Image (cartoon, rainbow, N blue to C red):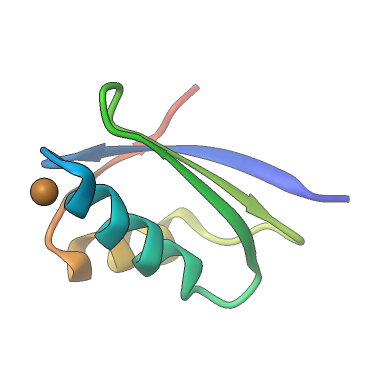
Length: 72
Ligand SMILES: [Cu+2]
């Protein structure tokens, strides 16, 4: 069964940022779908099995944005 996590991402200001974050998260093995909300600063990630928050954090940081944790 698929798992969904909502990540808090800081530093996105335009649709290019959304694309950068979407690409970075989509490139993680096991990630099935990424849905970024620019206004809320959230990235919803769908995955087949659980992926560690630190993996998402690294990908977001690598892309040039700040990972602020998983939204409750
Ligand atoms: Cu931008």
